[in-house]
Each structure stands twice: as structure tokens, then as C-alpha cells.
Image (cartoon, rainbow, N blue to C red):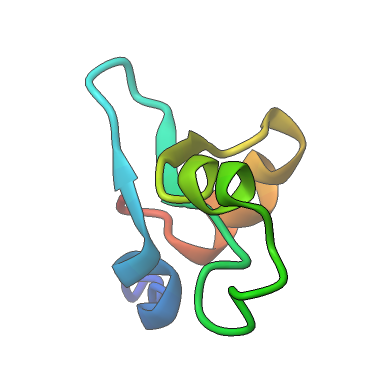
Length: 65
């Protein structure tokens, strides 16, 4: 059986932590920043863990990550 193809865009946006969870960057950080509060901008710089409800869909997109 041939190898499954990974979704290239998803590969570039996620990384695996030491415990096996998936880490992603926060959204809403590209443009239109002037009307967002400094607290919103500061907090969206950090990374977040992918939620458990999204894990099944993401494992299908990137099976070898």
C-alpha cells in the first residue's frame, strides 16, 4: 500500500511537543492590529496547544507528524 500524503500547509503550521501534543501559533495576528487592545496583541504572540476536538481531523491531515 502506498504512503499517505501529508497536507503540506498543515505540516508547516504545527509542531509536536515533548509529551506528544501539537502546538500552533495564535490567530488574528497579521493585520488590522491598531484597533485591538495591547493585551490582545501581547497574548496572541504566544503559542497554543491544539484542542482535543481538532486532533482527529489533524491526525488525518498529517499522519506522520
